[in-house]
Amino acid sequence: ETGVTQTPRHLVMGMTNKKSLKCEQHLGHNAMYWYKQSAKKPLELMFVYNFKEQTENNSVPSRFSPECPNSSHLFLHLHTLQPEDSALYLCASSLSSGNTIYFGEGSWLTVV
Amino acid sequence: AQTVTQSQPEMSVQEAETVTLSCTYDTSESDYYLFWYKQPPSRQMILVIRQEAYKQQNATENRFSVNFQKAAKSFSLKISDSQLGDAAMYFCAYRSGANSKLTFGKGITLSVRP
Image (cartoon, rainbow over all chains, first blue to last red; front, top):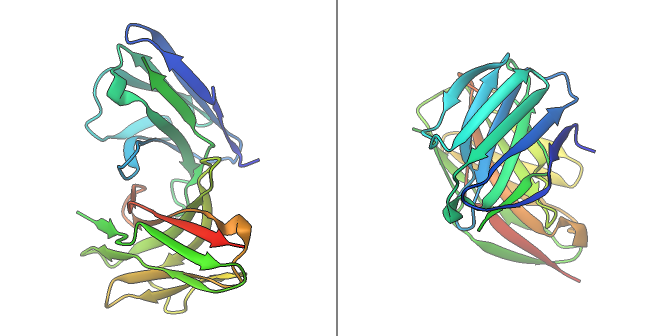
C-alpha cells in the first residue's frame, strides 16, 4: 500500500480508442505528476499539477490530455494513440513544499 | 539543465555482501535534493533514501547509505548485507529546490546471487 493508487493496472487499446488512466492519492498531497517509462529510456516527466493547476507540460503530444479535478485525483485521457506510446505510465504525488515524490504502481499501456 | 548519469547498466552482488551503485549529476544550483529509488519487477517505484544538498552528513536508512560528494557531484548508494529482495532496478534522481521536477538517471539493474 503506497498511498498512490492507479487504475487500471493494465490496458490494451486500439489506435482509434479513447480511454483514461486514473490516479488517486491518499497522502494529503497537493502536487501530482504523470511520468512515462519506456523501454531503453529514462523516466520522462509528462505533466505536473499543483493545487489542481497544471504547472508543467513537458512538450507532451495533445493525444495525451490530463485532468486534475481536485488535489487527490489525476486522470490521463488517451485518444488516437500510436504504438510507440506503449509504456508504463506512473502517477506520483508530493507536497508542493516537500521534497519527496511518492509513486503509484503504474499502468501498463499497450497500443495495438 | 540538470542531468543525472548512471554509467553502469548492470551489477551483481553475492548475498550478504556489500555493493555500491554509482551516480553523478550536473547542476549549477546550490539548493537541491538527491534520491535513490528502487523498482522491483512489480514496477512499483519505491523511495530508498534521500539526501538534502545542504546537509554534509551522508544519509543512512538501515542497510542503505549514500556517499554524497558535493564538490565532485557524486551520489553513490551502498547496500550492505545484500538480500535477495534487493534485486531490482535502481534509479538515481535529482530534484531542484526551486521546483518539483524529478530528473532520473537511466537506472542500473542489480542482481543478487544466492
